[in-house]
Length: 375
Image (cartoon, rainbow, N blue to C red; front, side, top):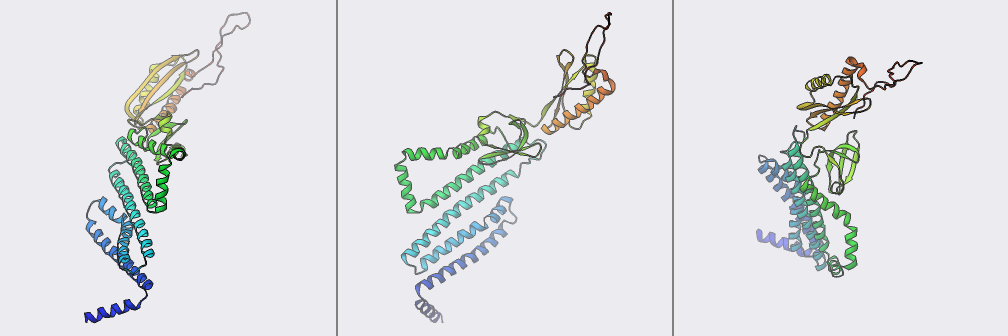
């Protein structure tokens, strides 16, 4: 029975033309690869359903590159079996080689992304003290983008080098470097500059994700660091886009470099008649009664005497820049209300002394509306 079946198959094969037989073999190889992928995917899913997140994510995210790898393998077997012409076999082998290179690059990029994501899950940016989290998130994201760029570049280079014409062009280009090398270097200068700036940012970390910055006269937080630019989310929800090289070459203020806590400053200008001790007592009361104060710093000092007013500096600390700003506003509002109610004549005034008629009487004139100058 088996001998008859084998003879029957051989007879059909001999009867079919080579092109049709080759197409059928390749279709069968494709179908076998698709079925094999389904079976392997189910097996891997069951094996990793109780494992940690990395392995489950790896199986889930590598389904498509795994499918391409299996199809490449089964089609390569089909190419060996099919009665193809030399030219057809060479073309298909080249296509399968390109698929193999793409699979390797795809798998490397996916594995890198999964590892980075799983690694960063242990760090919480929304924590109260997120300095360590910001360090790791910034470093990992920048290095991931740099590594992904290198993977893509190497994959494309490997694909291009499989073409004989491109390989010969590369050799001739190297042989005649000279002016062409200089031109290419100038053309790639912005790309290479940002690439090295990204590596330097990842290592030295002058800025991190969620850092509070004062840059270009604007205050905001670092929202995203890409391979070429940095996105700063400003306080009014605008986005300031700056190249990576900016943070290497130009000065800027980082309010959360070593910690998120900040000391806020309130400057107020008062008449000399206002008792400083009462202001000190009131500011201490405001700070202790505020949920924004972190309990670290509250200080009152007369920092300057001017012609008409004395300059009083108030320092209060808070856990981060946002709370520090709100606390400064709260101190201003409550302190000016206290002064208006208890020392209405203590706000800045303009005094003038003159002679009325023939006498030498002095007059004090309130020539300006009471105001408080703050910064």
